Length: 590
Image 1 (tube, one colour):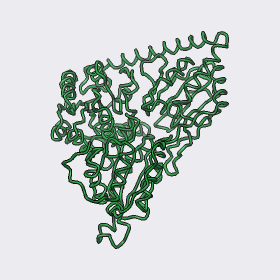
Image 2 (cartoon, helix red, strand yellow):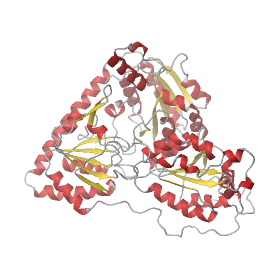
Image 3 (cartoon, one colour):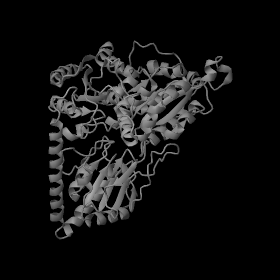
Image 4 (cartoon, one colour):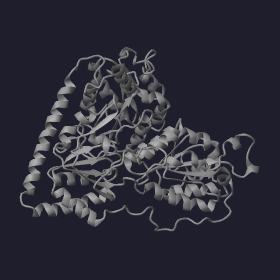
């Protein structure tokens, strides 16, 4: 509904056409850090577009991109991030690169110029203009384009949206000339026709290849399933569950998205010996890397050893070798599967399950064999869960608290809630101890340092208004990169619970130095140099309060944590962000 109090321009401007496309594609939010290069677009968004979708002011372009990334993870829908010219674009690449690796559809807009030399202000407009600006990020976006006229804006926008949303999904970049934005619109611009589809249907598996896979799986002695992006939102995980239960297969959830319930009897994630024991067929579902979930690595020697028997048959369904990077080596080691299908698992898995059920029903003794192996896997699953629960009790009264105790305390506080975990899960202790029983309850695994708070804000934004309790188990080193992002949650009333995983160190790298010290015979007591985050100790609770959050801590006595968590959860239920600073032992204890 139009706001009659807004003063409208008596003219139309070319940047209004961009806003028309934003509205046509029903974007719900725009994250940005302000910049004069897109002042024409900004004015059109605020006045012509009436700030609908609303703009979220961010303290850094990387955070703007990461909020859109987290939002896409949680909701399966894209969000816009706008970055200012060359300088803003050069702030954003780390966020863009991780969105590319994580197959997140993020619609990134930027600006340049004016490209017409006479319109450039001395110095500033020249240093903010580049020869093909998109080259700065071209190697890790799916597509970039810079329309030369306003008539090219709608078609490029529509193409960008389709490319972004077509699997494998990923970020795109649209760059708009400042002169184009600010020029008066003096003619009608052709828009995409009504009834045109936004993107093509997902690719389906070849029927002959699918039938061959069904034959191979039905004849297997034991099957393991590795799932990575298979249950991306909004599709859920039922197609993965049905396939695993039909086969009586062990499942390893790589976790880029939540693909399988943690307490399902067939889930043997983090148990390589149990998951792959006796396996002669491995089925991979939309994976990014086959090696990490199926091999054990020695970080001291950089060697990896497969846990799958050498003669096993590998079957791949997904998008392996689609959108392979020309710059980074995120494509990993070559995957020599004996059977491969380029197809969307969301459609291929139910079709494969149907074929398998037909075959299983016709093979004497096979249903009993499947039930028996499912029972054995379930027993192993129960044993591992019991083992992890017992390990979590070890060193229970230690100060500072162990990581497993922190995971246990948070679980005790949230298990009665409709909760969502944003990203990292305390070095897998969340997955070991919590019951991930709903497809939406995890946004996906943690990524690199300097990513989690931005992703978490995006996940929380996607869940705003649902009544769900959004929880971020926030590493201290990560927040030190982007502490200003806390302001965004308070400013836009994004309720979330941040529990600091505060070991006062960049401990992942510290551990690497400890490994090298042991390998080389040097002094492990010196491994902390260049790694620690104390002296002074960052006051995360004080920092959060200064940004408008409810906050408590630092909490060093683990016996004080439960009451603090309950107080913070009450604040979140009232619509406020809340932070609890929990001090932890650096070691993972398992």
